[in-house]
Image (cartoon, rainbow over all chains, first blue to last red; front, side, top):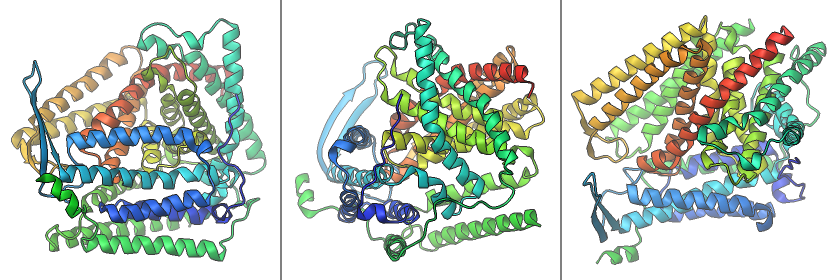
Length: 291
Length: 300
């Protein structure tokens, strides 16, 4: 089984930036966007996220699968929230303008009465929520396609993670292809013995149990092999002194500017939210629906 | 010297965090909770952080927190395994297998946490989740990475106890006390302002849910213990890890994505935690048995 990283080397503006600066910027954006419910402000954040996506020159073909899956999740969650009331945002709106009342529908056995009030606020909230979730997702989705997996350890080292953890991260990325190959070999070996992963029969518990012949050999094999790696690393005095890294990351002027921009946006957002700016925005034309 | 410096720095951070929360709470009270919104999630998060911190400081001398070459390698292997399994079982269609059985990978962080300690468990879950999302190309979602990390960290806490039996006793008492407290608080005053709706609601149903849940956990402990202390310990600590980990991630999404409480429970918590618990309860003991057999043979 071949596992390919989504990362491709592209000579784009985004990829020339330091990964540390990009991750800091992404976190600043995330913590800024979650302070707002105003559709106009959220659209600005979505715009920044889309700009990053476009500047990274990612294509629809590459990202199609992720888009479809994430869109389904976002839609389901928005609809669920629409019907069950708003979440941790009791301050988002206090009064509602009714457009239409659905129901009451009474459930047969328990005799619960279900009514759904469709209000202007609920619709605007749902649209804002959709935009907000997309803004966060577009920001997040760009990372796997544009950050080189081999730079991950040194990136997190640069962000303040201790040497040992940063090295473990590098090691984990390095183990992925090996373990994927082990999995493929195990699958073939079990198939040769008549194991049919395509036709797992039985009830739920039986089906889960039948995955053990795949899971257990790969895991235990990796653990047994680990002892040799530990010995080899100990022999080379791993962790005795601070490490040096093959790849060196240096902040360039653009990276510093990006971090400054991220910090600035975060501070501005926090101050604005403090002052009560950015609550749910109700367009006047939307209120007209209620009549 | 180094140790002293480290604990001093840790304490400084603790004080800074505390001061931050007190300031936030004060600011919120002084403006009658009107101007400064969204203080609650920050305060809750910081209280959680401080709790983890205090547990760590109290047990800092324990071997469970040690990170040597061994732990580094197991962290890497655990994370890589979790990432690869997540990718494989998420993307390869297996038509006959029901969706619930497609979370076998969850047993990896639970197993690694239980066997190699809380640090390895946390790293396995968190970095494994990042890796899996990287290979599938879904992006990075910090709340879910931390949630997956907690799924490995909690089972690792078993190492803080002298033996597995003592850890089970502790867990039973903890569940019992928490359940009694929750039930008492709810039944004494069932009608309070709902934390997510801001309206007055009746919570007495939750008292019964807590009561039944706690009873199932305690009964499960003694039932499983008939078959072996290890089996009971790994399943109980594993289930606790899944509930706390997924619970953390789905509650975080209430504030990140603005879900309603019902959406977080129906849309995220139940479909994620349910299959995870079933998978973990079946597969982790099998992994553990295989590991014990190999260890005995190798004599290490």
